[in-house]
Image 1 (tube, rainbow, N blue to C red):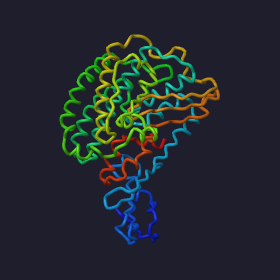
Image 2 (image 1 turned 120 degrees about the horizontal axis):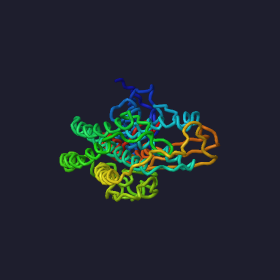
Image 3 (image 1 turned 30 degrees about the vertical axis):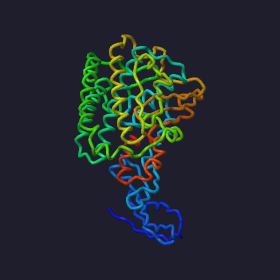
Image 4 (image 1 turned 90 degrees about the vertical axis):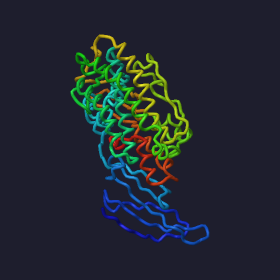
Length: 407
């Protein structure tokens, strides 16, 4: 790994500026003289470019950080390396043909991506969804939440230096859910399962019983995970009081999902918007007290327990019947002229789609409101004053996927 050293001339008292990388993927180290209060030159500030190839940045994402020793003074997130062009592609193709592209927004959570898009089109076109399809959607969405939160906890512990064991424990449970997705949709990650007015197909014979067995066994995994990790003194030292976000900061930055609720803000789209049939299920919305990295970790564990409650109710009550609106016309689908915004509580936060229809087979405007991008906007506030090692953990606690960031 090469480094470029630069010693730019700066007037005393000048604010340090972040030096752009000399070449994509090349870390840049620049030393900027820092003025002391007595007018002399103090210790130097070090400007470091972390990523986009850095393993702790969870994909093609870069952080430009200015360090005073090991303490973060400034931080700038840099996006755009993935070049997905999702929105423009969707405006150039039919409504239905865009469904597989939504799988790739958050490739850990394709089922919830499908649902958010389908829900928006259904509201735009006035389509109804049969009862059985509504239950299937809830079941698949909450299974998605379980496997996403397990993955986040595993990756977060790996960012702290745990050499793979927590991540393998998490992926062991995630694999059971991915097997269920493969059985019902034919794909393990890019499921392409939802359709306007329902679902692509019904659950195969025995699938609901297998899902119930996975769900019933999941609390034992959470108990084991919490026993191993929650009171581990290293985890508490590395996470408690680190990356704190107040309720005012969180709402001011439009944060959603577990990162918002960790700051004590009681906002969950499943409760606020009551989309689908969530008003039929009893579940609580866990809230944090401190808004730090530890609370963000615990939100995932506590929300997983509430997802289990929802799944047990949905698997018990799911009715027989059709799984798609018979009036739903998929070929040559043309919703009426109008606009609509639809949203769901995805595992990472509020995932919304904004569509404008001009009456043709393609949307005139297609826009995504991805939680990963919005939740990243407060990264600097979370990291300033902490060490560069802490900033890696703070970034991990946000839970981003770059397919959503560079949509």
